[in-house]
Length: 64
Image 1 (cartoon, rainbow, N blue to C red):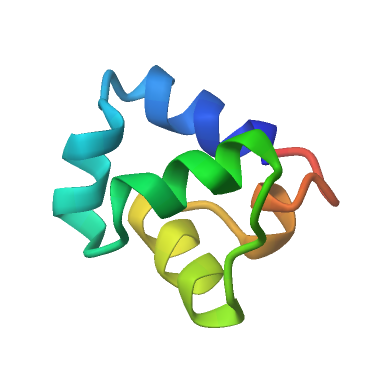
Image 2: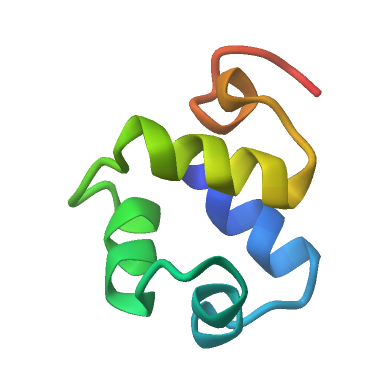
């Protein structure tokens, strides 16, 4: 999920900071960014809400 990393870095957040803000572990977030793991639907929605984007945007199915 390249967009997750772009959003995180664009907002000047570390993995630990995003983990604290979302309740998703830094290890899980790192796995999502590297494409090793896929987030559940609940986590996708939570991350999209946090960054004020759509789930489709996070999944790279639409432009902003």
